[in-house]
Amino acid sequence: MVPPNGHSRRPAPWPGSLRSVLVFLLSVAPATGALVPLAAQETTAEVYGNLSYSFNRVGPAGEAAWTAVDNASRVGLRGGVVGEGIEALYHLEAGALVNAGSGTALSQRFFLAGVRGSFGTITLGRHSTPYKVSGVRVDPFYDTSTLSVAGGLPRGPVASSGSFGLSRMTNGWADRGVTYRTPHRAGVSASASAFLGPQGGQDLAFGVLYERDGVRAGVDVHGDRTDGAVWSSTEGVDRAVRVHTVFRVGGPWSIGASVESLEPEVGDRQNLLYARGTLRATDGVQLVMALGRVGEGGAGHPSGTAVHAGAFWGPLPRVRIHGLYSHGELDDAGRRRALSVGLRVGFAWSPTGS
Image 1 (tube, one colour):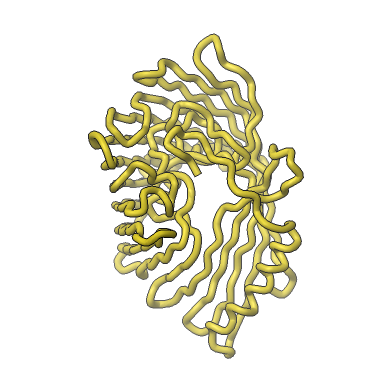
Image 2 (cartoon, rainbow, N blue to C red):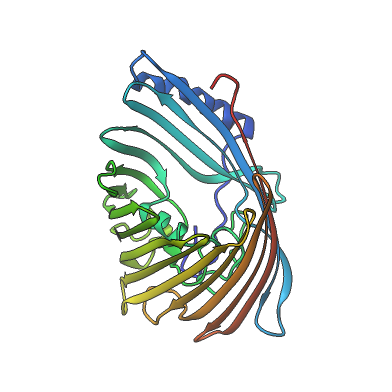
C-alpha cells in the first residue's frame, strides 16, 4: 500500500511456506461446496502468477540513476464451486518477493471469498475496493514504472501504483470488508461496500457503473471514517469521489479518463486528472500516451503535470515487453524523468479434472 509520500510500504511477510498456503487454499474449495446444492456441482481451481521486472533510469535532470525494480510480481489461487444458479468463490493473491533477499518467498496482497448468482455478487475479506479498481482500469501503465503520484518510481518488494494523475487511493487494499455488486440491468450495475475498523467505525463506499457498446463509465465515492486504519491509502482523506470512463473510439483506438476530488481532514480540496489514449498498432503491439495533472490542495499529493508514453509488445501468450518514458514537472520539486524497459512473464495452471 502507498502512504502519503507515495512510496510503497514493505508488506508484512506472508506466514508459512508457499506449499502451506497452497495446501490451505486447495482445502477451501471442498469447504465452499457446502454453500452449493449437491446436484450439478462443478469445482474449479487455477494457480497463476507472473514475474514482472524492469530496469529504470529515474530522477532530476543530471542526477538520474539506473535501478532495478520488481513491478508487483505475484502468485495466486482462485476458484470455486458452481451449482444450479449459484457459485461459491475464493481468490487469494500473494506478492512474490523477487528483490527481498531475506529468504521470504511471499508477502500479503489480498484474500476474499463470496457467493455469486442472479441476486448479484457478495464478497468478504481483504479487497481491492471498487474505487481503486475503476482507476486501475483507466491506466494501461498500472504496475509498471511510470512516474507515480509522488513524482518517483514505486518502491518496495511489491511495487505497484497508478501513474501520476491518479491518487494514491488507486493502490492498496481495504481490510475486513464486505462488498455487494448488483447484477447488470440495461448495462447498469451498482456496488456498496463497508470496511470495519479495528477499533470501531467503518469506511463506506458506493458506486454506479455503465457498461455497454464499448463504453465503460461510472462514479465511485469512498468515505474514510477510520483514519486510514482500514485502508492506509485513505490516510488524511475524509472523502474521495472519482468520475471515470473508457471508450472505444473505433477500430484500434480507445480513450480513457479519471477525474478525482479529494476532501482532506485538514486543508483545501485537491483535484486530480488522468487522461490517456491507446492505439493497438498490430495484434501484439499497443501504443499509449497519457497526461496527468494534480492540483494544489491538502490531501497530500504533490501538485504538477506529467506526461507518459509507452509501447507494449506481446510476442507470446502471457509474455509482455515494454518501453516507457515519463516526464513530470512538479510545482515544488522541479523536473522528474523516468525511462523504463521491462518484462512480464505469466503462467496459469488448472489441476486435472477441475
